[in-house]
Length: 407
Image (cartoon, rainbow, N blue to C red; front, side, top):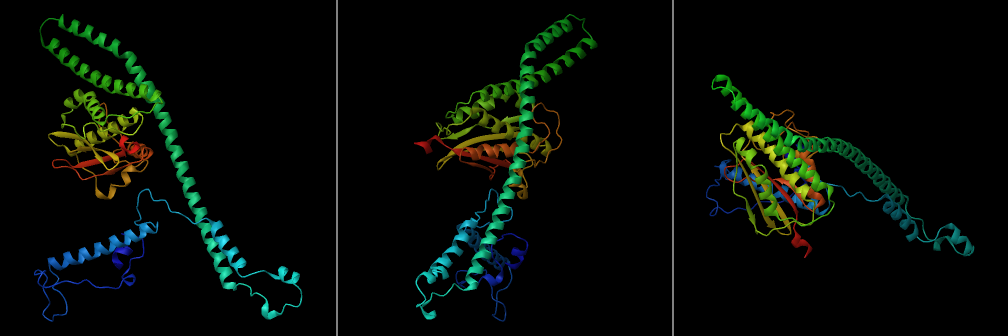
């Protein structure tokens, strides 16, 4: 426990000196645990290591439960933890009550007359009590100031992120509009070019031009796919109306939108499983759910390209868990290291500063999953790294309230 505490596996009190007790075991029920020759201990075999590990984990679990009940931070990297600082006014009130509880002061005594003897006068509160209360007030005041400063810095950081997103949003909106406006003109020019190539005499030059034309058509189709999707998102964003969304409909519409593009990227969508089939979200913006799925998709493409898997697979599912809709998004890429499970949802944290030009998954900004996390929290949920299904390396679970919670 001392070693774990020094490595800050937990930050609540948990050194060896904090505990006193025993672990009881029976010989008949634990044949793999062997006594030493002196019968003063156990042989340190695999069963002993397992017992030791289980005992430690049990104590650490209890430490975390007690810390949670006391609203104390459990681990150094605990996500979303906000300490509850005692207001300084409460500490000052404690000092005032100590004075008041001790009875009237000298001013009240003089009004009662001089016949009151010293033996009947109320004693003043001990100096130690008043000093202790004031020191506690000072400590709480400092903690409040530190918490205020932490929140101020976090607010400034968040505002900077919002300004960056606002500028990106304007650029993306212009991009989507321009692509949509140029789409028909480009298609018409491609058709004319195809006709001109067809009029050329048979030969190597004609075949070479035909191959180049096909590549150009494929590239523009990819551009139109993502441009049309962005234009659709922007048009949905213009409406401020919130509405319940069919989870099954949203997932299927998303997979159909990118089906052609995914096939060209050798990515296969597994069948979508939604239980129950009529699962619906709380009232929300449709564009926000689309943005969440697009974020997951772009990250998956980068991960699968990095893993160089021969058959790229993506799987989407959804289920009702208590009062929440849980949408799972899985891929068979490189996965996410355990030490990054919480960090990937921090602003500006990214593992992909560069990316191949594939029309959808560009370089990472470190904002995507932070936005996903904010969307989830705004609808009473969260986002986390889950346990992937067989055949997959990574699973992200997006959780928001279901419409059942409002009934």
